[in-house]
Length: 250
Image (cartoon, rainbow, N blue to C red; front, side):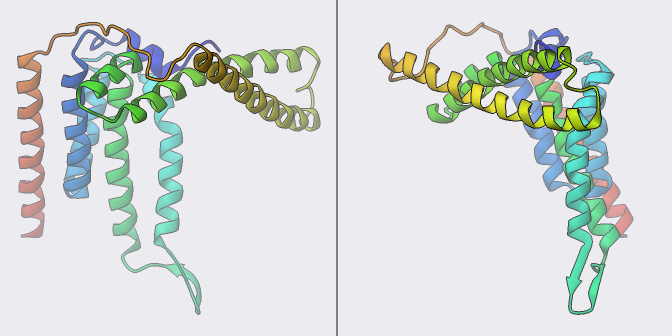
């Protein structure tokens, strides 16, 4: 376990050389459409568009994209269940229009999540952070995102090392040992990561690092054709969704 599958997919994506600002415009536009347009057919069209772009032109592996969407899908399913269940003096029952509410919630969430995953699987964080700075995002927010991104790899390295040691000592040979080893693994990873973060902070403070670490970002020129296609595609999504929704109401 040496890295994040989503991060590896972003580095290998066919859109790796495209400007992060161009991809931000497209993906944020898709997220906005997923939130504003009706669940039918807006969310369906947005979700299909995001998945098609990821697996098609961006050439993101289908296995990686599918694995990345599993946990958000489980979270959305739990959220939909809690939104449609009603608890009152008569006991537990279904809320009014439960099916419509659940469908709307799941549709908006999955469409927005697919759009965010399109950005995550095509844009490395090292490209995204300079783009956020250029868009005037507060420096503190960008620094927190950068530190969190770096600490993820510290967590992964610690997790892999400790789990290998536990496996070599037969720590996962039975259910009981596996349960105990998992608890020890979580405690060791958290304490080791906290210690690494503290030592990193002390080292930077000792070197007088009072501002963010500035680096020279890679120049990725914007594409007018890509921007025009993105705007035209988003406009087509909005128009088609409104036409279909209006026809259904009529």
